[in-house]
Image 1 (tube, rainbow, N blue to C red):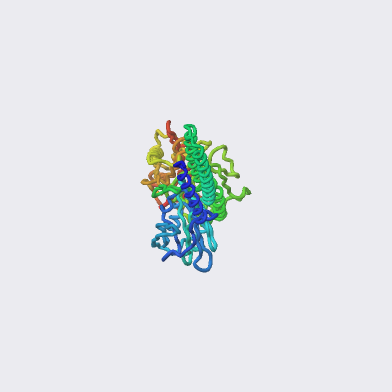
Image 2 (image 1 turned 60 degrees about the vertical axis):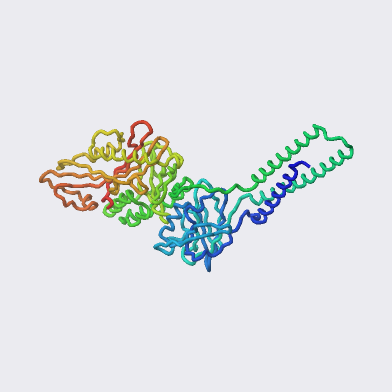
Length: 544
């Protein structure tokens, strides 16, 4: 009897026991636990801790069952979205998991007892379900963190019962394979043992000792058996599930706000709100603009609605205003408010081979995407990168602020600059610098939109920065005030249109006009930065 035969037999028994245990405990659905139970002293909204599920290599099966009548909701999404959804809501946070599901939890206070909208109305969930019960399966991976949330489907009511089970894909099949291999090894060990005993009896009856060749053959057989054990063990492991492991997604994991696959759906929703606002604005009522636009766009909208109140636009037969996706410039961002830059096509307009870059913002998970600003480029000048490569560094933000300041200085002084100025901006500046009759001089006062000089490159600032294939792209918005100093004794007579739209002028020496400058600056990795596109539009007033 060789020394390895008992070892092979022992491994075979372990494989059988392990395989039987896995198949019995997990069953054909590869799931352990997950039966819904009441979470002690739970608030109506229950969420997992932001870093609780920083694990890869398994899937969670989460089941929510309503405590009474109605339906329960359960969803899984990126922590940036889930945390924003529940940030002001009293909730129960799961701080630990147990072998059977929910472990420890803690109550967190909030200004509201229920979310602003029902959870099923959000579009940020990776997986979601409503019902009695509601059940989802969410894989935990190294690529992206996940946070789960459960609540009454309407957002109001008693806390649902919650169950969290662990799915190990392929574990049931792996267990069966382990049992089969173990049985085969046991049978093989028994058969080989009997043959060896028969050979020993034959040798003892005949008398001669085994030759060196026979001993070598036995040792070779033992080596083959050992390799067989290692091989079948590896096969059993490969047939089963991956081994769960802890991963570090960080305390503030970033999210890609809008992926290309979802961009057209977002634009369709925006167009619905935007076209409704346009129709009302054309009648002189700008009350719907805030449902579609924000920031600089909203300032332009206000002027359009006021102008239409006194001078209604001519009706056209072009139909609704439609945006179609060409490219999405994906950028990782750590939290709300989020923004997304999209290269859009306008089917009812001729872009002349250029690029129309539209920037949209979203203030919260319960808020819609709104139009913030846009810039037209005369040709296709910038190409998107993947989200990770496009995300700017701290150094990139400083560089962007530097050249944004340079653009401000050029407008204020009107002198030569290391920043190359586009033809359209030069023409706009020329028009703004032209001195009308009775005007002694013109001063230009320029500042970041909203007057925010510090932190203007942050998430909610007026300067957005991202990397593209050609270098660093900066989308900036500025308040441009044109101050006309009148000659002594000159009386400024406002045109009727100007007076109706912008109001009467009551200052004797200075007449001011408000403009919005939207510009795109490209900072190549080598070479001179340049303004590659700009729009200058009159507005009623600047934000306060």
